[in-house]
Length: 396
Image (cartoon, rainbow, N blue to C red; front, top):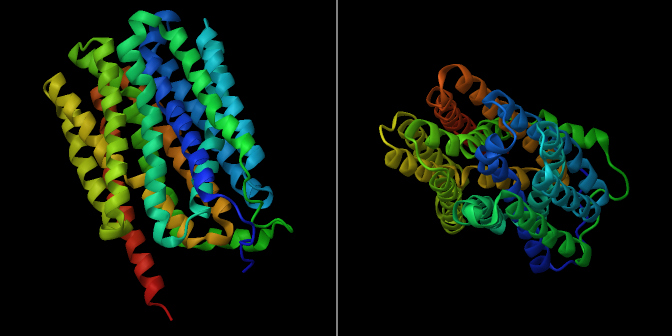
């Protein structure tokens, strides 16, 4: 096995701060379509099927980027990728603020997908690489907190300021926020590629034969589907099913992302006690109960409570699973992350699109059966992951 290069000295604290800034912007990327969707319906006028296509194309662009970022950072390092992707996100936010037709909104969603996919993969891999095994799980959950901050920001601003500023100015503000990590990425020194002397394709392909990689990838498939579906459709669900005002629905969405943020803060503390596997199981069980409640809630207040509760359940699942991947494949962490994040994004691409199609014919309450199914599959896959890890540790 070719080992990763470890001699290059970098400032871990600075790199972690830049990664957190990039993940903050990725949180905005993930929440923004769901938060502005009611406003886009009013401004441009398109149906739920077309809205589902926005999620589909954005997530497909993320998927394409996820297939390439891992080998790129393993071979060449992080700096150029992160700088370019932060600029793509800023440009997409600006285009969304100016868009008056569905076609322009669709183009912005695609650009947003490419930029967001690079930020997501690059910052996660960077965080994993600069921390040792003892601190990796905690660091990944801390990184996830900033994802929650970003995802919370736009729904909160819409809920509080949309009547005062309007949607366009809030999107301009998002553009400026996305330039903060761009500046940090330019200023800080990043580690070079772990395989700087040449990318060993045979060795990298070998990780594809490891069942642990695919189990983690498909767990993220169902979890990404959960996060994209709830984050993308909860505001519309609350407004249509319970006649909740748009500003109030946006605040519930903000509460959902705040719960994810708070859950990851707690998870960064307790992961060393519960360990990765048990933490994911407990989290998935809570999310399953909340998903059932959300779908069957008889009132808007109970549905809003379920939305916050499901955020708590989702919190630890994604970053803790990535910590397992980073620990298991240190020499090719970028490539391994590229595979599992790409698989995860397939779920993020399919689930909200499918929820939109179901909603078009049967209503959003039926579409929200998908998170219930996804949570059950996460529990099953996590049990299988724990079994594989146990066998690996007991092998001579």
